[in-house]
Image (spheres, rainbow over the protein chains, first blue to last red):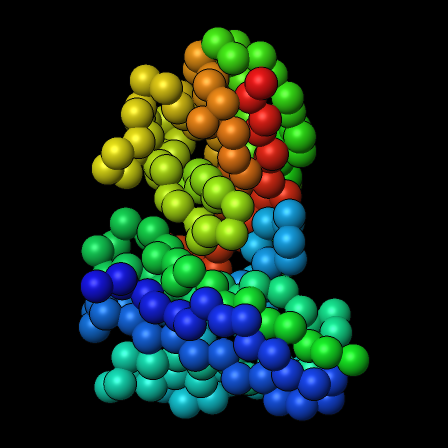
Length: 112
Length: 116
């Protein structure tokens, strides 16, 4: 079983719609979670971090965390073609090594 | 966010040669940096954890004699791919954490290595 799982997609949404990206993790001790965006050929860029249960909003992005269900999600409102990228979910392992465990990423396509 | 700079962004080398990639934290000190490798259409694979002033910790399956990591200062870590072969061609990305062990991880721009 992979430690952080994401649906690889592609997830296709029309411009202006809400894109919903999901992620589950297996390490119940993980406390910190991150969403990164990666454009083709580029390195990952941090979008959101979330540490507590509930929602965290930043502009068009909302991260949601449910530790009981071991589930993290990212909502992108008013999706734009420029949001088309691969979104990586990451969990900080509980072993105190500081290592981030990445999911395989979900490719999002926003169609004009 | 914090700035992590990587150099070179692209390098092409002949098989058998060695290539050094530098990773610098520009506006903060990083006692720990991480080196990742990414093959096309795959996720990031952690290669090693680079610790300032001590030996790097390598992930299982990563050859420490092939991928030499040096973290001589709080702002610089280097990865040297020794005796490179075509199968080492990949996108190498370094990252550094701002603050505590639970803080956010920031990535360099990545270095694309092509071994002919």
